[in-house]
Length: 194
Image (cartoon, one colour):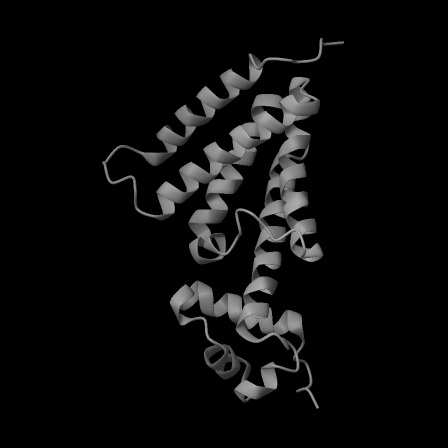
């Protein structure tokens, strides 16, 4: 019988705490079981697919977390202000949780409905902001890819230690976002205003 209070969500909570504290290399079923104060075989009652399933559940959770952050950051904002808030939230999440961020798949398995739904929410958070620029159809897709490439690239370089020069990263992020928003204001195929 499963331990009282231990659920798949609680196992993911323990795994995320382990990731945050010790990094991705420390993620093993034995380490998660020790945090949960259960024997390793007991975890299979909650994650029958073992470590592979646990990694999948982590990917779903962290993708949902990032989607929530982006949606909250853009709420009540439009166009440039919304893009600036969205990029800032993206980069902030990666800085605060680099190991969680690394667990977000860039191309989720289309056969995994939970991960596909989480990834769709993430993309839709970006698309919703871009519609404020009058972008529709294929142009909103191209612009979404552009925003994600900029946000992910900056976040990855930041968390990976790619920016070693002494200048303030906040200023660089503002400059990058300024270039991005200027490009979005002049994006091809915008619907006429009004």
